[in-house]
Image (tube, rainbow, N blue to C red; front, side, top):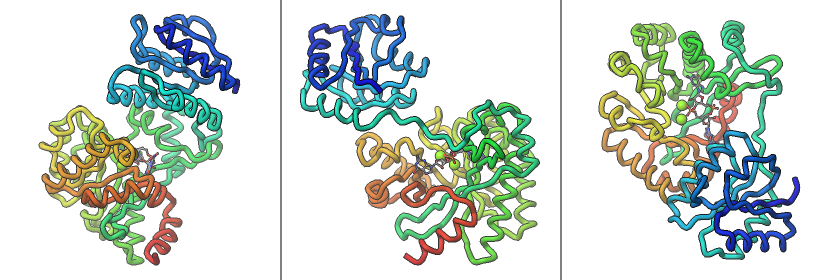
Length: 391
Ligand code: C2E
Ligand code: MG
Ligand code: MG
């Protein structure tokens, strides 16, 4: 990648200052005072220094536009606003898969800017690695065939009691073991399955596999809960509670060992029907977890109305709680809220020991994340569990 930098700022004096410093650091530079001009021609700079506050097209619009055209560029944000605004702009850029190197406040601190420029050299933009090799679009018929040909497999991610370090559960996460695409993650096919009305069949298959696994573990003395993700479509089927109950009984299991994870957005559509189903599921003894808590629109309304037993704090807060004061406060508040409502609280996305330690201090009950273990096939899970228990 060429070492070139563009400054987008309506403040000509400031833009020139930035460009001069960057040139001294060996960059080719360009200046653009009106962001609209940037998008008129083909550009291939490796870094963009972007002012958020501009009169014609502001920085947030630029970020959105960059995301839309899929431009891979390093961003350094500049703003006279408070850190809250910069923070939101950084998050927005991440959402659009742009790499934010950092942000600068005016007046410029030269040392900070130079060290940002140097850090970019060291790390070219991350291209997300795909496990899958075949890039042709997935169509719904393929998914249906895959379910029927048993190409869908479940990985299990351990959940630990944060206070004791004991493994208390596992979340079942689907993967598609495709003959030519490789291991396809759920993010690449769940939405298509949902749009094509395939979730009934897919979830039945997932629940069936999870229940069988739970039975196998029970037989060898592994007594943990299994959490299964369900979609909106699944909780519109009025016979779900009876069907699940029968399945559990057939396998000699206790309903308390199955937790159904539901995302907030999944519940917003047909709340009346889902409330009926969810209430009957609770009455039958199943655990109900509100997944990705904090990302939907009406979290509190749902908490008030649906008999959840567990609250899973979304990882977009947990992952950053060691470095981001606001994320930390949100997590802490979620822990308190869940406990006030007599719910178990789970933090997902624990990626380092600092986060784990903070969660323990906050009194969070259960933890899940790469720092503890990644999702893995059932066989590996057993080996991992042995090693973990021996520690
Ligand atoms: P989710 O239910 O919120 O699951 C957690 C996701 O976070 C999983 O991604 C897991 O691998 C990932 N994860 C766990 N720990 C960490 C961590 O420390 N850092 C980071 N960055 N990520 C972590 P996965 O397996 O790709 O699943 C993505 C989503 O797909 C799930 O989010 C869930 O909404 C959906 N999904 C997975 N399996 C099923 C299924 O059987 N049925 C349905 N309806 N949805 C499923
Ligand atoms: Mg989940
Ligand atoms: Mg989640």
